[in-house]
Length: 80
Image: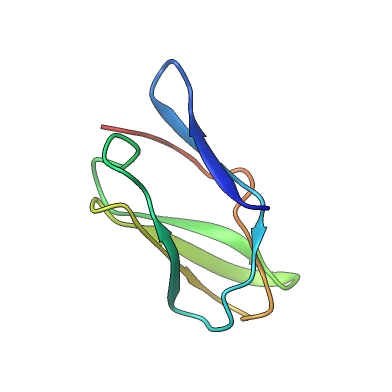
């Protein structure tokens, strides 16, 4: 199960594995207070190959790579 949390220093931590069905899809949007100050791009594991994830300042998470699954574990960024 994928999810997110924010710690006391305002760092957001993503975790878990998701299956979206297609590259370039957005599994969810982070709520206000959990969003980065700048658009970020993060490398991820995508069905055992390289993929990447973008997180916009609007909180939209978009995953790219092999559509079987995406691992979000280890993604951490400072929220504004």
